[in-house]
Image (cartoon, rainbow, N blue to C red; front, side):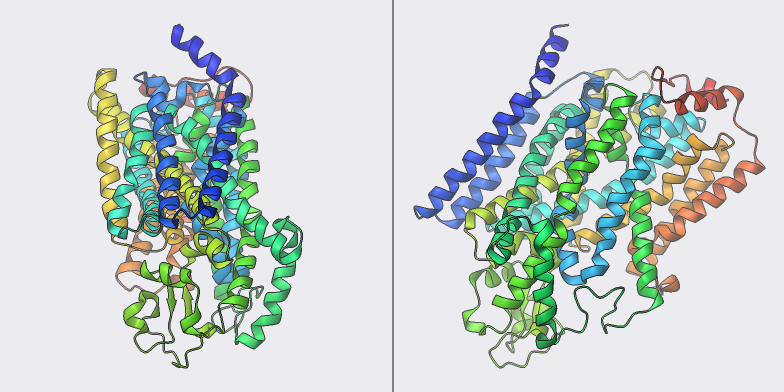
Length: 613
């Protein structure tokens, strides 16, 4: 009772608490700006940003520690819609959104909008098709729903396999992002940096589960959105005189278009569905819309996002949370295209055409960690990893064809590219770190909970005591984190590619079973299980064979959109097998009807076998 009173007081004062936190962070940035003016080194400022922000997250995680099952798995179902929306935005806007998306828009121009459209549109599917109904179901995890709806452990086990596959690819990308930030701003090797970043991830998620992760993610959202907006607002004011980048970046694009012919640009920034030769063809358009489709459907199937809607007090709050989530995500996504435009304009105007000996210091700094390359020198391929296969003319002047910058460097390097004070670069690093850590926390928790709750408790030892289940969850969380860090250290691909793989896998393996389980009562146990296996199998087969074994692309579709083949396969197989097998019981069909009614009590489907059969 005392704990409930304490939590009630905390919930009632959330506005005051996070208002003070925001003010404290702004004051911290101002103090560091003053220290920079007083001559404090960039390295010290970088260390302060990284370690003090991680320290704050760890402190929140420690203060939010819990040994109660409901608190650990679903934050006691007490999170108000506004703050759940903020936490979901933080959970959602991973290193891919914060670090990778603007970089992709920088390099791909119009074609990169597929990520913005797909990820944003996916939340419409979440709000209309899934979130309220899964909340009304009233359990802890997505495999819980699959187990109850489709007759127990086989469906649950297949769901866990898909969940782990998608979440592992996603969390590897987040740790990759942490490694980039830590290696650049702490001056350590990338391979070591990925493990350094694990400390902040584990302290937040291991001690308090969803409760700690929720309140940490709210704090992380505040930092990441401040960090994302400030540099581009400054750039907008510098270039256009108006500090509203979302409305003014059209001027930057006009200047880019004017410079492109003089720099020899073939594929213009605003060219639609253009390939490397600037030509329009069917394959480019197909990949654009295939990616939008896979990202939208994947958004509505990601377990760590759907878990967030289990934490609200009511079904109505779950609906409101989706709306708040969209608003908080919109603030960053609406800004990303302007980030790309202003950063590209700075490079075109102040880097391209510059003498190699007079390039700014950031080129060397980012080149040392393999994210920038100036390929004019004869030894460029040795000095810069990105210059492999690039032939420079060795005239001492950097041409556009001789400049290489990784998509994952654009946002982090923009403050330095624009000549802003180093404290702004440190602020952006802190924001990127917050984005990566918040998503990694949610993903690791989803994986650990699936293993401890859905596999161990539901399938192996239903009588396991609470203490043992929580200990197992924490041990598994640490184990998965270490394996993910080791995988990230191998640099398997770019952040955005790894994240897109996760979306296609989740979309193919989970979305049809979830949607048809709610909206088509005739969906049978065998049909759903066969559909999950088929969709997951087709998607992973295409991804693995094209990425690692050189299999030709089907219809030219890139493997980040492997869900284009997996999703239809899952729907078709689920439908056909369901018609060939017995319909669900009358009790199950009544249960599905009750979930689809907006009002009423939460339906706790605990007697799974009784309902399913």
